[in-house]
Image (cartoon, rainbow, N blue to C red):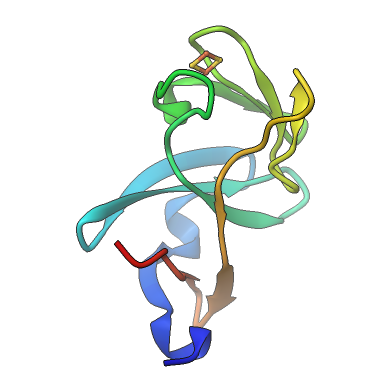
Amino acid sequence: MSDQENYQKVCEVDDVWEGEMDVFDVGESEVLIVHSPGGEIRAYSPICPHQDHPLVEGELENCVLTCSAHLWQFDAISGKGINPTGTSLTSYPSKVEDDCIWVVLPES
Ligand code: FES
């Protein structure tokens, strides 16, 4: 199957306002949707790559996502670590279509 066929609906775009992030159940998985200031929408694994803390408990400010556990910071658009560098969020392919957010999850 192509990625096109593997897209699963996460939520409506209006469910995550610009400048906010939230976690949604998609099948057996959870997905963190980040709607950055400026309108970019990204889908990530909801767990911090540092020590498995839920990222949704952190903050999103100026396109920087900060984990609440030990304040690691990530670029909300690229997913790359800002502080520290050399790490990154696990991102999933996503798209906006029909006013909804769609994601391709890894095979489990
Ligand atoms: S668990 Fe996220 S910064 Fe440590």
